[in-house]
Length: 466
View 1: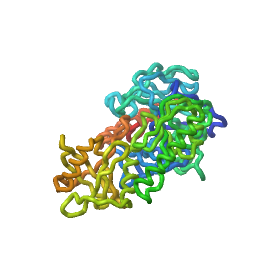
View 2: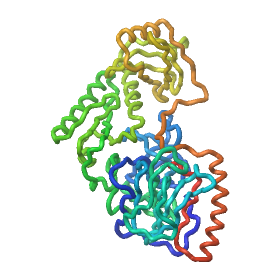
View 3: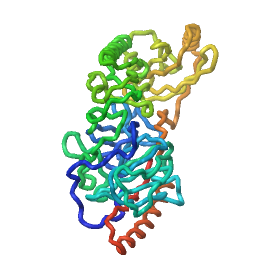
View 4: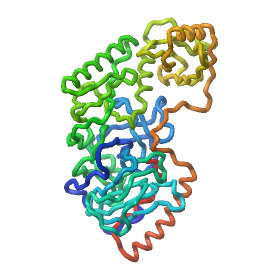
């Protein structure tokens, strides 16, 4: 995002936190501020407030927007170029994060309601700060109105360039997007190289988020909650085969559940996702004290963990002695059936990075599965579902007799489904917005000359996919 106009000298960063949450209650944190380049330009890198990084790789893909897989967290970090935070509040009341003056309260692009932030509010605060609230379903304030801290200003929604109800929240300082969670990573804040701004922690009271990443700023101030969560565990080594991997993972899970039960917290093991379901009341700080926990997910943000488990089992299967079935005539694809947690998996090896469609009968129905071989090892694993012993025998017989049909996938890629809140922009988005921005610049420049306001017309952006 580029500033359209900004009058007067730059102001120093706030000396103390002054922001309050723009919503009430608990919710999920869906998308993060990108300290690398918060301008919606996809440069292949995202850096969060803690210094956690993610970039594209050959194995993990988001379908609709540039979110990248972080191996240590076992989840996607969303998303490249994002200039704020997306909170998963659905048609709920929104409140002014600090007192100030409303400088914009309308549909951002009236002639293109499915573009940009849709119904949007911008509030100017002291010290050169402006807050933006996007994708609202209803606006309850007007331009020029003075608002108090915590005053109700609108209802979250799904307007603009959005495919699911939520609120996009951005903080600007001196016309530049900054991270209200500050910077706690090692070394200087990468945001300095963008427009010379540093991010400082601005929350006087931290927003209640169910799924803060490890070491997240303000996490220690979050109280306990009974909101359901999934603790993703660090996956053990796959170098000793599937049985050793499964035993080690179960040992981690039992140890984690035991510690939670001792603390009076209910928990259950989910071996299919390599995690622990926690419905009991406990704080994020306490959960991260458990050494096996890699990250915390909420039901709204779970994405990729099951595929991550399948990939780990596939790598473990490579070193497990087992008779393998050749699945195609060229002998470039082999596999065998593996029983895991009541489900039947087809695991094996194909050409590195190859993608094929496998069609076979399970004795009752014709099944179709996409096989994506790991780019580095060729390992793959696909879930065939819950099969009876008779169905397993039928599938094995079909595979051994060459009854399965293998078709290569060409010029396409198998992708994971994205979070329903976002989609990528089209070329028409960029073209239309370029004309609107040019017209907006002229109008705002004329207004600034006539009235000399010091508010930020911060709505030029090539797209918003928040």
